[in-house]
Length: 227
Image (cartoon, rainbow, N blue to C red; front, side, top):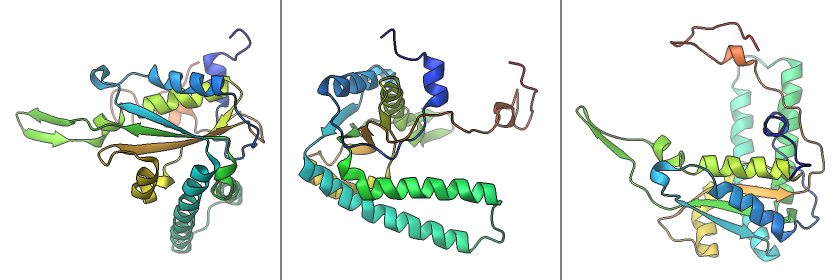
């Protein structure tokens, strides 16, 4: 534990790792990753998560085939959207987008080579809120009880020197994947997290300056950032 990076170093250098080595990940580390997920908060402490660790080559190939189909559809839709743009983005931004697309395409082609795939699933939960003005049902309350667990797992991967990324493209073929893995119909396979030793390096990451995305006491009210 003493050799692991601190929490802020982990957060500031954690990025989506889509190029993974096929080297096996020790089962003891897989347990630590999943256990980190179970330490996340959830609404009413109901802990609606269930995690499926997929290592069987045939099952990984099954998931990858459907993931690749979803990626091809996603890519085509984005290319068509790009063709409708009035202006092209600046060259630097375009190059960033191309690098991301190449990494995402690599994952789609090689997902089955990742030593571990983790499906984060969520059991049903009532999210309807009743008030004087009537009732409202929001997915925010539902997914707030699963994505903190996924984020914990991603942070744990980074702390352990493992690469990972959060993806949801599998949802286009969720029913087929659920049937193959025996997941009950009422359970949602919310996120897919491929895990392995990274081919590349971790951060630093590039993000918008915090003062550009932070408002104080009202929308659009900015304040200078004083670290």
